[in-house]
Length: 162
Ligand SMILES: [Zn+2]
Image (tube, rainbow, N blue to C red; front, side):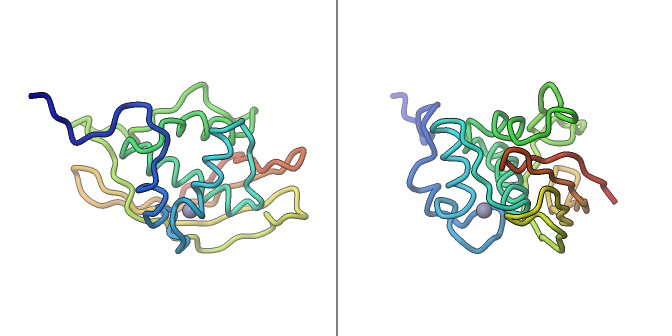
């Protein structure tokens, strides 16, 4: 017998995922929140975040779902939403490397404040705290991220970790 509880590799995010609470903590289910943005990107490469905050949330969700293996296009999405001048060549989606080599588990996102970043802005910042757990314990990352909008598309530029 060779039974497995895991779905076949390469499946698109399924209905169970879509009905789960969105990792970004926006209060909606994934399918009606960050899943819409991830889905548009997966379908035809469209980057559809209407605001800097929506993009920030969808990027956090991509990190969170990559860590659990639920979003196969996470790395592509994170790179595509990164401004070319600061974009890394590739990402290590397992999060900060630790000695055990174990994955980071993203627990919660708190968006604390923002400036600009709206449908009529070309720049904006979002300040947030991301909570995560590693085998060493719980951690937080407090960051102010900067976003720019080019040809109507919001992109992550860089961030200041404090
Ligand atoms: Zn979301």
